[in-house]
Length: 74
Image (tube, rainbow, N blue to C red):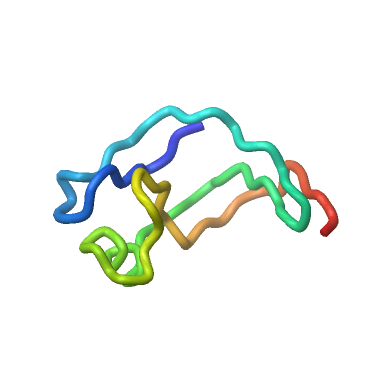
């Protein structure tokens, strides 16, 4: 799958479009086949190094629309 990966905090030059393995569906999760995605202000704050951001490297992108390919109950 394609994913936008943040490897270090800072500007947009720290984002890369990478090929990653398709994740396994864990309990209480869904797997989406994305049709559209966008970056929002939260993604920009994470990229800049906000205190609430994930450990790096991180796949970012909070807004997505698509089709549910799989799901698992909690």
